[in-house]
Image (cartoon, rainbow, N blue to C red; front, side, top):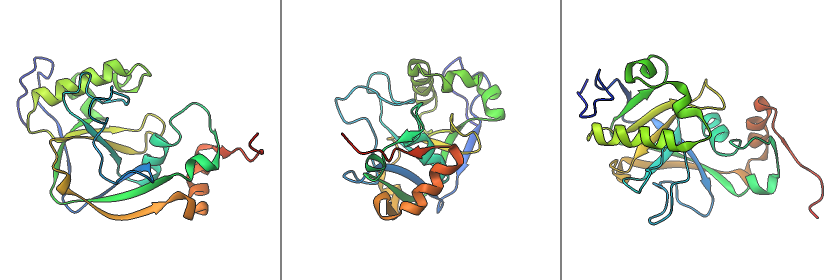
Length: 201
């Protein structure tokens, strides 16, 4: 347990270790590579834990494919999608070449860090971005954050800071969703999500 420099973290850091050798999964557009810390240089923040003013960049991943899917593909209120849009995505598996130290922003880690779930689950990302910046600043060796999906709290997700060397994330496999329609259907079914099969105007 390390002591943080920010007065917000009076108890220091409660870590969640992701062991070296573990595979994480992330979903991305097929035209993009498997390892990407976003947003692109010069682009404004877009996602939950992105840096407010470009102080760092983030790679989002999950422990399991359903977690990555629900956070990436099903993150919008509508559960009716066009298959053509999903077919442009891919899931990539990344094997960790070292263990990662991430802040535990779930379970008892919320109380430990003085965080309530609303700070990381509301639609206004300004709050969660400020929180991520606090962690990044207070714990200079911290690799990122561990949290539960806001859409399926059985799924654990990760936001990794770009202080993680991309070489520590080695792609080991990729599934292009247009080639595995049955798998995609199985990912949709537990969430009551369906495809719109009506003709495109």
